[in-house]
Length: 429
Ligand code: GDP
Ligand code: IMO
Ligand code: MG
Image (cartoon, rainbow, N blue to C red; front, top):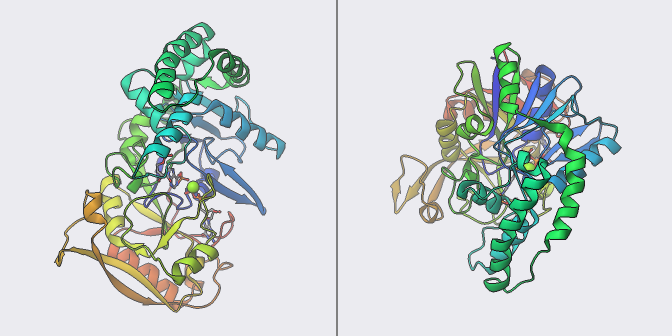
């Protein structure tokens, strides 16, 4: 396969960063296509930890171009922090390995403030990351947005800022009863950001097509997860972009090429950060144990992640709406100390079995889960290098999942490090 789209198959934090970093070895370009600094993708290489929010997880590899495509909402301030963090750790970041789409929308300070004020005012919270994601996408759709190319043209940017601040300051003052933003301070900050970021500008859709037409290998890195998709997720407890395969196409300007396959990243259990329904959630000691052993604390906000059993109903839904062709199963090592492991195989609602994953969050919050039990393996598996060396019960668990999901599990991740991975069948082959 020439191109591989990587999507989160659950509610985010499935280990996309780790898997993308690993697969970058076989890629010529890595493209982020949606979301913004709400994402936190963790890479661990030689025991060093790097958390990326906007820069694609291929950046640690040389000879690979990383692109931030049009579908991303870009926070210049945090992007500069991210670049500086990489450079201080010895990773070069320059035009050779990073390009930013002219058409990507910019997150401005008023987006972050609005995200915060709204969340404070809501009686039913969403639990956003407060990175300004929703308000920035809202401006994009209503055509008030500022694109990277507008930001690079100082006269255009200053004029757009003036117009938009009139609107936002009115709202901050009169609706939220908060202070206003001063244009001079914003202009000064953004003049600095422009100086730092202008070298990365690119028509990434055009560049990407150069790669595709030459048959080069491209990895598309999703952020968040299927169940946080604005259309297909657990609305309104979702993020503001299409986190699914469709978002990859519009998010970087490509069509459904015949050479594309889709890899779904899936944790061996389930987690969720923020509010919203979670049918298999474990609100008991076992949930606390999995959270502690799995280090389930947000890579962006540090919040404790909610934890639950693996949910095959939700996963089959993710496979259907993304056209997922194979799975990378992560964090299997975290299940190693359990005597018994459960997999949710069906939902019932008002005593009747549901044929599919409901698209109504209220209904989803009331479903009852039916579980299949699997025997645990009770030995550490982190250092195992081949599928055949896994304990019999771990193999059985994986094979049962493949039967239930009806697609292959090609990658099995047994630890956060790059080398703690079993690749049964390479998704690029
Ligand atoms: P992402 O947002 O999908 O990239 O995932 P995050 O980085 O937010 O969260 C995944 C966490 O699990 C990170 O701390 C990773 O280092 C870690 N991780 C990834 N794969 C594995 C694995 O197979 N086993 C263990 N124990 N940790 C893993
Ligand atoms: P990665 O890419 C997990 C969640 C937030 C909140 C909801 C809306 O690391 O998997 P937003 O700030 O996007 O408006 O918040 O979405 N959320 C994530 N949860 N992983 C993420 O990204 C997330 N990005 C957003 O917690 O519930
Ligand atoms: Mg994350």
